[in-house]
Length: 172
Image 1 (spheres, helix red, strand yellow):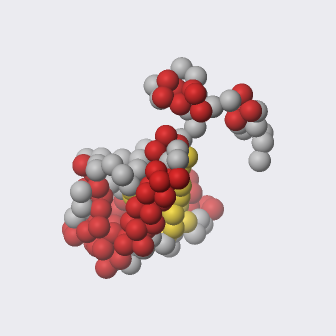
Image 2 (cartoon, rainbow, N blue to C red):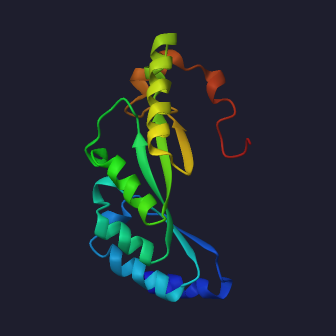
Image 3 (cartoon, rainbow, N blue to C red):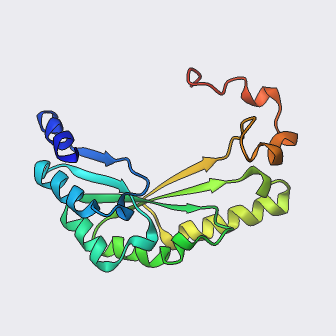
């Protein structure tokens, strides 16, 4: 399937290709997929998602040798210790060593930044981590709860109908 999809892109001569699989480097055959894409589209720069705990020296070198120019890693909520990020600093250092840029995403949980002290503490920690890791690109994700979702009960007191009036696919 990946080979057919990559071959279908040849006619467009893409400069960049985003492999949109949140768990790409955890797939059993990710190396074969990456190699095939790079062989079919050798001049196309590849961007993908990766999990820091999968980025060994060998893995990052392989990515570099097969067209990956940037990988997105999830810092997530900097106040939480995630198993997937126990080696985040080392993963980013390896990526820099092999010339792969870091796209770092983070999550802002509104409940953690209510109040001046909480907000300052959260953002101070976030800025410290961003300064330490020095990503080339950053993406902030701000939680927006919806009725019926698991987190709604925690948020409903802070949400008004006004918050949702423009929350659709038509409003810029």
